[in-house]
Length: 623
Ligand code: FAD
Image (cartoon, rainbow, N blue to C red; front, top):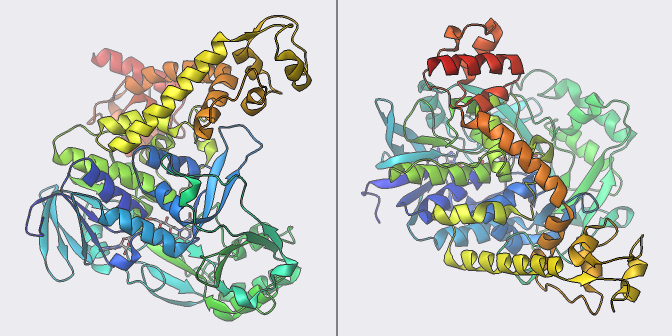
């Protein structure tokens, strides 16, 4: 491959969206070019060095189930792994890995460099070549024109990025990186709706200046969780703990004293920030009655002393940052290695996107990641994978594919963005998924790997491992169904003490496992029943599928009902003002969002069930 060729797909930006996009395009058979500012920052974590968490871990497992890189990178870079919500139901359990920033970048770069069909080129993209309403290539900073059938834009916080520390501000893509100014100007000329958002990051601190003896240590879980369905604990580097400390009244006093020089509170920053990841000045102002906020003291890696104090993101002036940091327990002598800052950047209204993440206005242009109004590596990676896949499918004249809300958190993400849009940085939560009992981390592969294989995203090794696991699961479920115990059975003496009601008649092992007090591990600890499955993933699957069978069935019934609305498509050129009986407000909302199906229309806020009935009647009349 060389740069003179006509590529199938060009991906602009080597962050989390861009790397997954380029890999997915190349895996699915497209000649792909990844164009990025700096090869050294491929897979760079702009903010906290951690992957996963509630809702986000689900996305990572889904990216992995479709052959993506993020979970593999987390397994090779994770220095503290935890399962969040471990004591709660399986739907909301989530894996989180504190990552070594350098190891993560190295892992992603290695995957990128070893991907067939993929070239990387270090150059800023300054312009898009658009002919009529179709993108046909890009122009780089040194004037090089490179053509392609499709282009995926994943420029993160870089478009017209403006960094703020106190009342000082300057242009930047993130600290230490240039912004994308020319491209931002060019994109503003295209028919895409843009606005400004903001996000922020805390100051980093030298661990040697901290007193960890007064903080609470937080080790990772044992056994250590694994992220990728292809991963193992053997891939993990050395594991180290995080720590916890808190802000106090004196910290809050210092923050309040600096608000007159805060870019957020003096109106210098106009972009809206992430509600669920607020700056410390925001928290102190919004929750004025709270006299303390938790801070997770997280190592940035195994070979650096820098730590990331998670919970004190700030854009206050540097002198206030120094005072507020030093007022915290254990931080009294802290040396700040990098100041905290906020960044404002351009984003595009995601309602202007199709579910494939292609722009509705410019054919062949796909958008993914932070530029679609989301925040977080996982949200970016998920969109990147889908945008890269669909750009590749378009290049080969195949229909687009994106998962539905009942198939994946990725489906929830895309549908929320394209249907509802967002006015603030969007992050994933389990509460956003109405079918969350089905969309668990543990079954992401069962939900998506077969589809991924059909789409060309899943390689032979992953496919073989998946099939092996499925075989174990099915055989074991059948064994538990077919094997029965009765009051005289040899296992009963060991079994009864584990049960609230002793065995008084014949029961299958399946019905015994269904009892709330029984676990698969306990059942298998009984000599005449165990040892059961060795593979912990397969064992967990058997347990969840049997224990939650009733709930899962009920949710499947609800999905069936909803499917009818999803399958009722709306004409793309439908002017909703011609539908009799819709209020002006409803017409305005529908014309604005241009839903592709009745199901999508029903999720737009303010669209009532009555309006949906009117719409259905109209569609029937149209024939
Ligand atoms: P990025 O990771 O930003 O990657 C963009 C890539 O595009 C970069 O490689 C860049 O070099 C490249 N690029 C840009 N323009 C061009 C061009 N013209 N030509 C070629 N290459 C280009 N997320 C959270 O979940 N919680 C937080 O608290 C949080 N805080 C943040 C604080 C800061 C200061 C920043 C900068 C980000 C923060 N994030 C946070 C967001 C998180 O970093 C992003 O969501 C994530 O990195 C988005 O991934 P992306 O791939 O869309 O963009």
